[in-house]
Length: 213
Image (cartoon, rainbow, N blue to C red; front, side):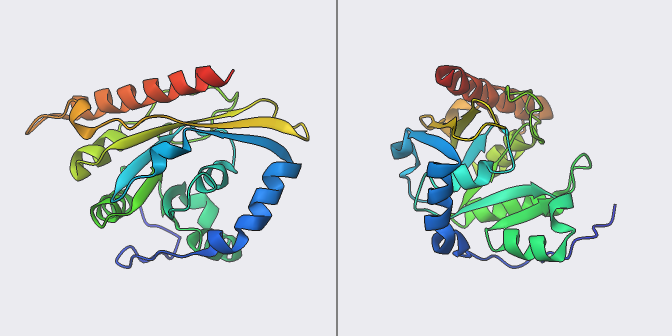
């Protein structure tokens, strides 16, 4: 399946747009929402690793990005990049496109290389936003990337009390790291190990989400 989005997967950038708009985003979190960050110390890590979070709203990358001074890279659905103006903006927030449902190896290989270069990859294992806000079943992609990179995973739960309400409570609950050695990978392991690892990660995210209720 051909992509309609012009994104160069051979080039790697660390754009710092979020640093420039951080004051505006922080103000939004204080006026539009009541955002509480928990466990931010769990993101104080060096080198490459994976952040895995449930997906509740279009603002999830902003909530996660504001939880640390490090730059994060985000996998985002291809459809968000079809508007040239929006595409330029989110690319400069270090997002890159994935075609969902086809095993998009351009995006997967780009993800793997990012982590190997010492960057932080943020992925939403469910593959799409939850319609009712509750965590759903994870796709196996996060397991595949964790296996390929041998990277640790930091689980994050985002809890939004009432999305449509001004001043609603938002909790970004950052859990302790899941060492790669605990994800159950073996040499020459089959795809079922990727699925099991994805389930383990999603179970940890769900537990963090439950703590916020």
